[in-house]
Amino acid sequence: VTKESDFGILFLHNEGYSTMCGHAIIAITKVAVETGFVKLVEPETQIKIDSPAGLITSYAKIKNGKVDEVYFHNVPSFVQLMDEEINVDGLGKVKFDIAYGGAFYAFVNADELGISMTPENYRQLIEKGMDIKRAVMKKYELKHPFDEDLNFLYGTIFTGKALNKNADSRNVCIFAEGEVDRSPTGTGVSARMALHYVKGEIKLNEVMTIESILGTSFKASPIKETTFGDYKSVIPEVTGTAYITGRNEFWIDPADPLKHGFILR
Image 1: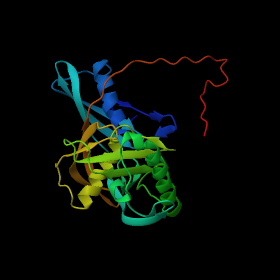
Image 2: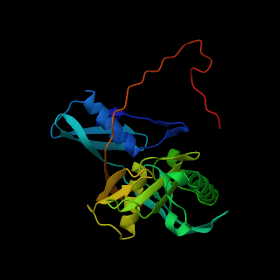
Image 3: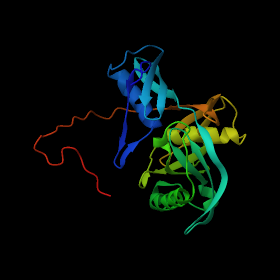
Image 4: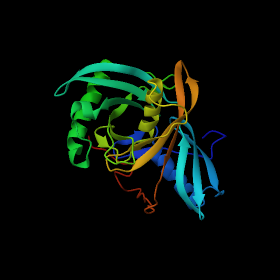
């Protein structure tokens, strides 16, 4: 944990760890403020959080003594590959971009591929998302400017038209070994801000509402130009909500042969 941060965080999911998770930043900000882990400051509480991807600054907007919504400034986000094309079994030639927003993602247009981004179609999204990910990984080598541990493709993100009138676009992320993100993906929308900005599709401080496979949404905006190694980058701002649903406590029995955990792949 660095001196300027309030605390550090690791992100766990059922396939292992991730380098960064935007919705988890929103969630931990709400939990930290509402449980008294950090001091509540009205009308806005600022928290600095160390993550494997770098230092994240989050802000909790306070209303009636509670966290109403959270926004955070992500790590510098940039485009690594743009307007590429690859052959994928069952799909033919697929156009894609690769951008980084705390992790690397391959972005493809689901509408162009004729793939529906609805909850009922999650199995096809997983199958095609992993097919695209494997094809890209086989042909392309990714490089983070500072951290070799981040030199890998984390997932495929399908983009397309929003299904709800209050959103601008829909985002479905297939990550790790075939997991589906039920949120719009904080790192994914951050990478999209870099991609849209480079393509001239969004301006600084212009806000875009991106919905998830379930219809929940994040607001995202590129708020600042910067450089990150040799890459022209942007600092994305992402806004969303989270809700505390419970508290868990793990016990470890020294005699348990699986006390250190297990994973089956």
